[in-house]
Length: 297
Image 1 (cartoon, rainbow, N blue to C red):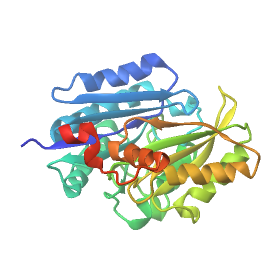
Image 2: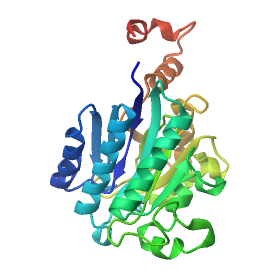
Image 3: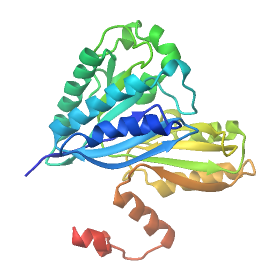
């Protein structure tokens, strides 16, 4: 039975459609790789891409995407609300079928080393691929962003895993790793005060004492003039979406602010949404086996 791996790379471009399409185009050219989804956010100036396939094919597509991003994105002139350190900012591999986390770790190392050697973009390994505990968290690696990375890579704790103590002059660095499935989830607020979103993000994220498996930051959506709590739900089974949504709602109310809507970026596991529906509908005696798609699969 074929092994299937998912890859969800993020590129630092969400405004220039022609650049996004040029990057997506190289994925479509790799036989055996299925492009499941891609979405661009102009405020974040970032695109999230989801593809699946057998490991070797997905690895090739990830490398080609890294090259296309390097050739088309110049971070010296890049602006956007989402933190970034690379033209292709992050490349996570997720085991889907007949794949282990250990195999995804090895895949990430192979791809990372190739990117460093052939594209001259230094690479940090993160999450399950991390070479040290302080490198597991992507936010810790990315701290300082592109503008501060040239100095950071000379620090003893922050030498890249591949590519030397340097950055690519226009493409920066990239984080490559293996991880479990996550849900990229954003909550929009009825305010243009970014400080409120920052305060709420600090309350809900794990590293500030909030929910486990939650990463969050406040961002400003300039085109809509609203503040947003941008969230990565790193383990939706242990910390479900509805629990985070309700705490954001409660904390926002302290400032006379409401939630105007929320959004999922890219693809989400079905069970993450079923858990939320079960909570809000107050279903009694509900089983996930009652979901038609689950029974068919």
